[in-house]
Length: 357
Length: 263
Image (cartoon, rainbow over all chains, first blue to last red; front, side, top):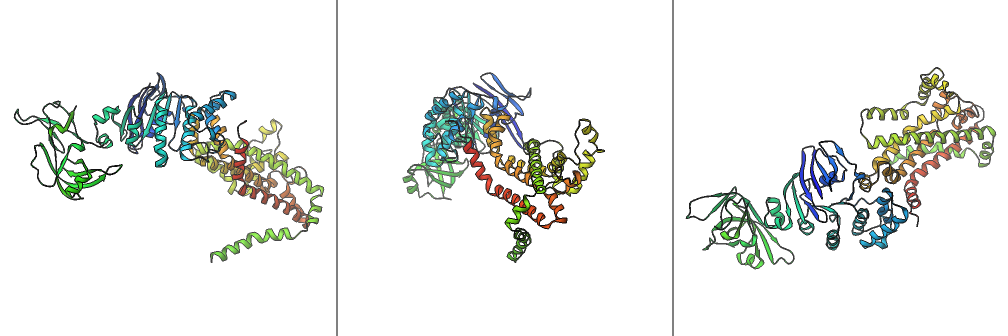
């Protein structure tokens, strides 16, 4: 298990995140660029010093800002795959993968066997004598992984491992990598800016925003109960944060948020702070509708985004109070004559609002 | 306009070289070069300049490494000090060396106490050459270290390589072309050294009379001998320069090939 509290001051940027990660599982650090993901990895690798906090792997202290303890990177039991892989350009594939074993003082006769096994596992055995400068993106990624994994590290750090690949390669490699990582016994930390990768790879997901943890939890927890605007956008739902308002027994329960008031179902948990409204629960009307839906808003269409793969469904971004994202069918877009700048009514039922603390 | 000026410069730089080579026939060149005095100067020049290059590389490599990789107080001062011999008139360098290592110099007594005499000895020639050649080597080697992307050192560190091993396996090999080019430039500078040598070590045939000094001496009595020596020095310099300009990429490839794993 990895137990970390990572603090680093760099100019005006402050990183201050704490999390734990289990062995045999993948923890994804996800966030936009500048959220501090790479810095967190470099601190764990020992390539930079902590200003605050600590890092412990299986109880072994790697760094502790309080005592000034810092185990140098080369003495840590880690594997680190940098964003652009950083294969040694003056060495062949074999020499790259053998590098760590040689540095660790493994016997020559053992090195050959271990390197070959590692290349075999990643399906790149035929590349063994290639200069590392003559490889495709996907091949370089595999060599970098083989080079890190051949040391059987207890902590594997992956920095945007797919972002240097073109779209087609990325899809192919993503599946393989998922299979590979799920079989590893070590703690795996996976850094990405991609929500899709976060959901594909993350047994546990830690969302970073501006150097802090916006939310951390299992994949399901994040999907069902987003707690920050970034997470909501990541999974594509409407999130509001507010307080319940009591208006006596006759009126339906209401929650007030800075963006507006929502009528919620009576059975929803009282005292809830977070509300989500699925984009599919919202209906659009060009005229003020005769509807039983208790939440009714008027807004302007800002954007129409066809959903992959075929664009049969369209996401409609509404400028309204509150701002809403609605998902409708392509037929509905045509029937309503939806276009940018159009005024439109949006309605959803009280039961369409998920409330949780 | 620019073309005209460039042409003028070409004449200024090229004409002396061409006329130097045209001035002497190959037969006469070989004839003059086989004279004992010339051979003596040639031998001395090779021995001293190679020794000076070895000293500069041995002591300069750690300095270049520190300047490229570390920040420390007084770094700017050290940089200026190292670059100084490049702009200092060589005769001034010779005088400075005398005041430091001469019989009555600052360190003269300490040196003679351990039985070392520098002024007017072959060892003195090596010191003078090393003094003027050092900045050329250190500058090139430092640039070589600086140009190695830090990501490779990070990768080495995360692959269990201690700083020493990272230097031997990554930083050194990647900077090798620049280090070799720097050594070659330093060697050329040492080979051509005149002012500091004649001031600090004098002009004694067989002891301190290197090729450039022999050229100067021959000029007083035997113009043909001076020209023959000059042509030889020119060929040396040209060969070194061409090796540096064309060489590093090929050298790098050669090193990479030489480092293939035992199969």
